[in-house]
Image 1 (cartoon, rainbow, N blue to C red):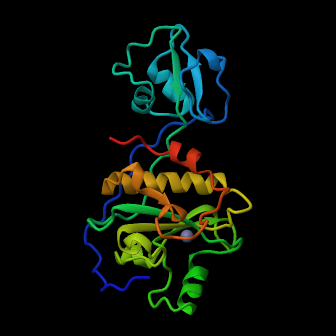
Image 2: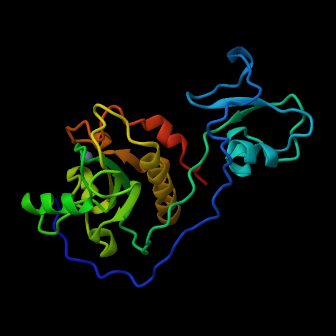
Image 3: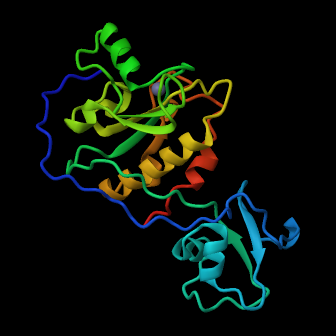
Length: 254
Ligand SMILES: [Zn+2]
């Protein structure tokens, strides 16, 4: 953990609540028309395709699959939403997560986001705060954000905002690579060496990361797992964390 004087909380409180995408069960419904792999564009795992039918538009497809029109166009390298002749095979990206509301403070120190798991089954921010103080972290809870799993009196997918975030303090979550200073630390409750995070947790995480990276202009390459930080010998956040699928839910870089 790194020691650094407390920075007074910024006065500006901004909420980056962008209009949520309308998702009407599209995320789970299989596409009506799928093509065999041979005739499909190169498709990443978890991404489907769709052959445009007469009358379908970029807008109607964005509503159907729960992705924004701009995301749909970018995924297919299309510039004009009107150029969608019937028969066109489109890549349908995974739905992008709606931004999650969180306090944001102007602060150039945040250049990375580091994702962790708690490696415990039952936990919440207050419990981890106590545990970190017992371990000698004088400022308590080392993460900036905690995303709960429905245990210890919290809702599944609930976002807890740590006091280090509200006071814009360094974290105490990854001392390698200067990440306690530059990295926003997010911890999901659970042990993902033997099970996956819940869908509610992943939705909150993707939405929070989308909010943070939009505000702090953090590129995708700087959103990392704890295990990705050079010099860190850890499996955190566990091999069952669906990293590729999670990244697919992030908004495309500008
Ligand atoms: Zn970790």
